[in-house]
Length: 360
Image 1 (cartoon, rainbow, N blue to C red):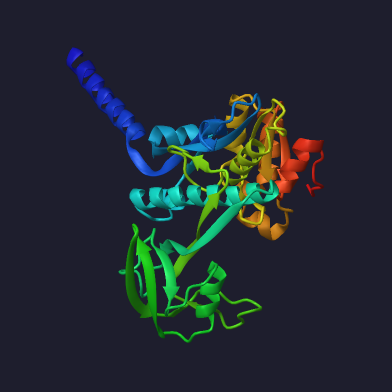
Image 2 (cartoon, helix red, strand yellow; image 1 turned 30 degrees about the vertical axis):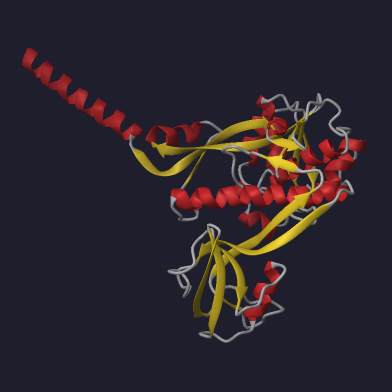
């Protein structure tokens, strides 16, 4: 009998070990959780001076950790956690390439923030268009072995353009399999390569009814700016484009004498382009929770008018504003979610309390 009990105990112990091992075993993906709401005054200096005003603007983030069985189970019971496959997070790129792209997104967000803030404040700023930054090289591209993520393409066939649209239009109507010469910068060093054009999938439009040709890269503009006074930004380990709106508010308010924050604790999120438009981002529900933890009373959320087509592709089938508003109502009632389409919408709210009209 004693021997039988020992056997049962041993078998049970094996199952316990297997169970624990299964829970701790890594799986292909990440756990997304509320991150921090960091005071941008610690990152931004103008002419070497730190913002010491009573109000604060926070950049909100999502915390990513490698997933295991236990973490995945937690996402099933904790509404503030979610699971995402590695490919969906990194776009299929290596960790090093993903980090490089996220760092570029951050630097691009800062450049756009400076352009918008200085223009709004009527302060001097000079922009220099470097070329198109390579975010991804498609599998069918003839340049997949010669062009890398992180390169900046400066010219095609000797032609330099002043925005990405110029590069796109130059290639759009070329036949397939036409050889083109590419000049590029990689880690500050100039290079040159050649390859054939391809027909781009899903590129048909009213302007291009037969689709566009291209070289098979996903791109964005690479712009450097020079300002007076000088802005220096050190975002530390934070990457990605979603802090654009909040960087713009921090820089603008600091430039104009800290008149907008009025002692308030203000958080938010959203990309910023050079024309002042705010774009949607991911993980906004988690960013609302980060704002709550930091004591914010205002949270700016990108706004797009919802429709059936848009909602098919939105996170949880809700727009950023819908998801942020729902999260705050349920879990952070002291946080007022304010919808914004543009930087001016955010400024107008801080100055007057007026909120743009929305649908749903």
